Amino acid sequence: NEARLQKKCSKSPFVIKLFTLLAVNTEYAMVMEMGGRSLESLYNSHGHHEVLERTKNNPTERLARCKYITWCLLKGLMHLHNNDVMHRDIGPKNILISADGGVKLCDFGYAKVCRPGELLNDALGTPIYASPRVLNGEPYGREADYYAAGSVLWMLDQLIEPFTGFTQLHQLLDYHDE
Image (tube, rainbow, N blue to C red):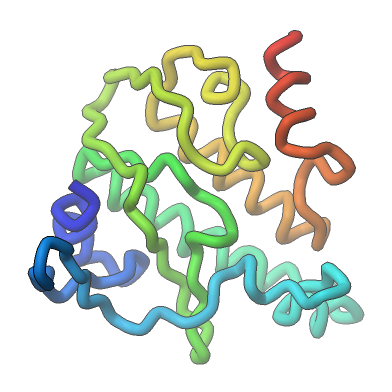
């Protein structure tokens, strides 16, 4: 399923390309393009983002970089949704930044076909970026991907993860109690 959905969306310049699927004994190996480092891996051990931290004293440059990453992320999501695919795990670990600054979505392990107006029920993804509906186990649609993208945008702007200070368990419990 992951390979099929990723292949379906590989035509976008904002989605990591899947070239082929190889059968190796009883396992499968996906052959994909090199995409760069994840947005998550660009944080150093002190929690500072390598790419955006360099622009901290130049707000115009930093804003331009954040806008570009957000634009690419939203273009990638629009492509997925236009192909009736919902990613369901949008977060810094699944957004790749190449050496030349290109931005691509990757990791379609939780992706699922989701047609317009269709609602899903399973709570998947990275809780710190997931929408309240997902965390509460309520039906959700494509807007959950955009909520996660908004959380990434907030992280890019503030240079820290959303909901800092809470563990994922606290976040789940807090949303569940509301």
